[in-house]
Image (cartoon, rainbow, N blue to C red; front, side):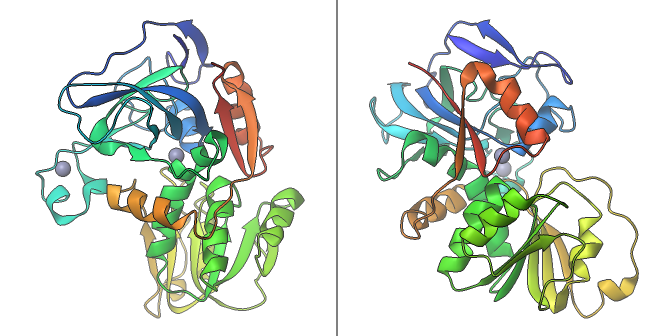
Length: 329
Ligand SMILES: [Zn+2]
Ligand SMILES: [Zn+2]
């Protein structure tokens, strides 16, 4: 099979011809049709996450069709269209796993990080961490739901019942979650980097009340803010825009250092928190909700062989919405 492989950090991915993996007991073998390109993939390329094994095939927003199942798999069958997200394995017995917080499991393994991911023609996954994709979605439209959607949704839920919600960094996750927020009658305020009028227009087109530059004051104080951009200076910035009792949710897996800030910004029972990974419950909830909204991804398509171009476009802010690799059959 063809796979785009990261052999070491700070390298371009290389197209290699590899032996297709096989489904061991408990696994499914999936023929990949589409795989989203996530900012986390950039962090992996840049060596900013603890990846234990190089070479690695990135990609954790995978949509494909089950080709084969390993022994013991009873819920999925060849021909099922499925999605494979970031969370690839958890131990099931630790204090986090047994308390419904498997996203924090220390033994967790992640797709496209420790397990080979979806920048390839085939991938194997633990069947317990694979989800059926709602029929209404095409392969390309479903792919961004699997990380931008799921982790965005977890971050959104962490923001509580905020009526006025700020979103910093208007990329793949923000554009999906804005649709959920508007559907739930929240007022969304979108913050982008200076001059990113495409992202601002996208936000307004999806129902945001206001869009502006991240250093600008929104027209009214916010109840909560979600930061999707990996920029630590946005933490005090967002804190300065939320009301007493409000929450700032940092939704990225990696962020530059947060500058020091006056205690006044935190005072008044304001909270800063991060969101880490996802649970299978998040996936089930979001994939049930998404078709009702309906959440519709704005997708920029690339062929698998153009993965480096897709990553470069994401890095340079040239993707409006979500980038998705299409795997020709
Ligand atoms: Zn565990
Ligand atoms: Zn991701």
